[in-house]
Image (cartoon, rainbow, N blue to C red):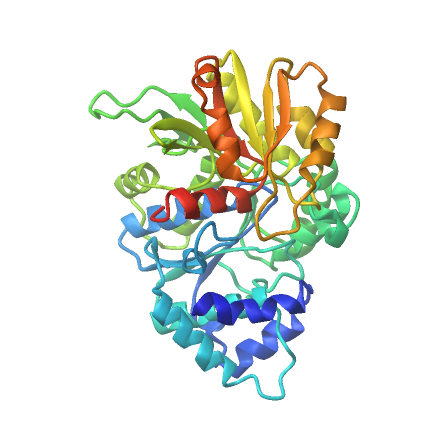
Length: 423
């Protein structure tokens, strides 16, 4: 029922701005002012950092709200307390109560509605702290309504959503730097020089105590700990790496620096809580190995250039003879740049549409792919993801390559919903 109700707001599109969300929050008692928050912006890594923070703070004994987007399978994934999604019946009731206040109000967007519901739920449940992920940009994002965040975070920055945020990295950096608040701590991940200059100028203007952590470094697991996970160290803190990929050395360092800022503010977060929380962090759909009919399949969104680089780096670390890519992409993405990063001579490419979304035409992608990498072993379009999977796992295919499903988080979500609905 909730999906059908919230989808009614989809027709109002995406409109950045704070007027509608402020009006909406005023109608329901300004719940956003009742919850201390960590505000997390960035192009890539936002979700992982939110997952690390909420997991560690939960291990430290706090009642922790987490708001992220988009969801992979179900709307309830977006709103969690102590890593447990909100119940559908509760979310539906919150929406019905909110709608009763909308008479003669400016019509909110879908994202503004779900954001208001998150604030309302966290306030009602009296969470100790909430980890809030920016939806798009930062300055005019519906989550950017708190003047006193505990910490503001910018995980990374690359060219994405330029249609709304501006054509250059400096433009995009200016939008994301909008989450920084006067005299409030900031943690900033590695940024391109053009973007770093914009963010640094904003930090100086607002007098933000800022930290720019270096990537964590890999270390051997402590001798006293029997653990199959790799370990890393950042800021003198040692912890296990539960999420794969070199990009996590940056994401974990950003999370650790954020936790240290909280410690300086009096939050009780022990080394044991950090170790337990980092070990228990889960973030589905990103460099995740799953089973499809007893076959191993790697799934990852890889929906922009930076994410594609991370995926290609991880795939190369597995040393496969060839890679069989199963891909679908949205029409708005950088198709050429992503394909240039991922494809290598001898690889196989299977293309599908992204169900239920503005998908790029698979045939057009196939033509582009063959122009970029004419040495592909095979490039073919399929009418459905299932047909593409069946082809990818023919006996003659799986002996010489690994299979990777990527190109869109919505495509990954479609896979999980169809073949692993409990994820």
